[in-house]
Length: 128
Image (cartoon, rainbow, N blue to C red; front, side, top):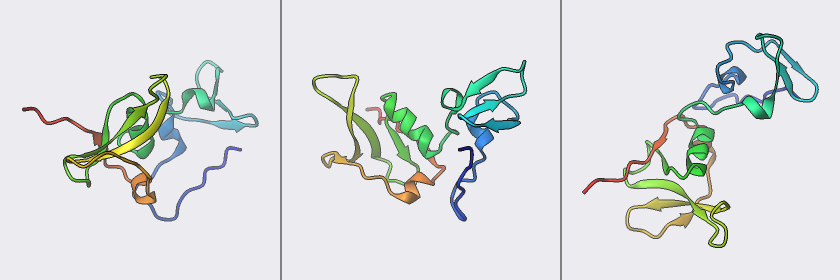
């Protein structure tokens, strides 16, 4: 349950500890996904404390879900991804689209190189 599958070769080298906010060391992983953290004996559920390292793919998706367009630095300057919300319920994201220049937005199908890149950033709209 606590095993981490690491790719033999990727663009980002991560350790599980990078996903723990404000925790320097994780000592034990127990059944049920509970990490015992070396601070006043408190237990934290994994799903409650994991965060995404900055500029990673998970970080970029979090930005998109926060309604902040994200982009890979290797993409053309006018290319980014953004959420498309459900017209009946603005709390539901129906799709993530890739916008490139003046072309119509297209449903985005993420590729493995995009998921393993560490050069994600926030898209800054040009100012006139």
